Image (tube, rainbow, N blue to C red; front, side):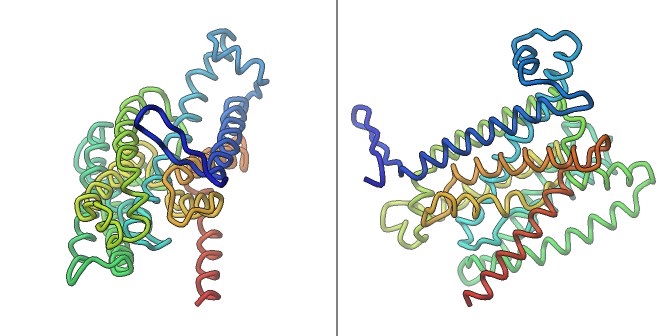
Length: 340
């Protein structure tokens, strides 16, 4: 049998065996990356010391592990999963492997909203969050409305999204150039996307918001799986595709903007994770769970590389993720050209 059917009373869930194997392997990989992230720092901590610190012991080194390293590691995992899910949402909606928030302008829109909060307002965490969400939502609405003429097409949405992304990038550059020097330096540093300095005060509310989006998306997972076969076919199975598409876009925007508000626009995780997860799981559509697990592993791994590469100086994780994503994009485009 290639699938298992789990039953409890009147409810049943069909799970592919390969998906179960992938989840188990990815869980082990993510746990290993998390442990390595807790061990690595200015002073190496053994796994035994890490487990003791998580249990509340360890004195000074234990405080460093619990208060400095743990929130950063958790942020990498949760934010990576959120970006992976956002990428899976938009690639399902557009039915295009290039349909991700960082390609179609949502990251740039969220960054525009955050820039306005930094340059015009005082740039508090609450203002950054609200600005990022509003900026991402406005960018998504613009792309959606511009691409909906004559019937919404995935290819049209991606092309228009790329154009909107280019215009927003130019606008963001203009805002930075017009800002005061100190504000501009802070904005440019934040633009790279970084988990440096992330603490418990920074992640509490975002984790709660993302948890809400994850639960909401889980309730839509069966409909998303049907919609992966095509919007027209999904409608014949009882899926309200137009309503579902709008809900998915809002969830994707929310996930992207929440991550951007804390860590800045982290590029290419949302683009690469869904397709890598799909190939590992060998699913016909872009699966949500493989995308989330792959995104968590990619961002956690990229953050470790960013810390080690020029140690003791920690690079922004966005620099590493961009390099990884650029290689992936070249491979993807080359494969599409050869297929064509």
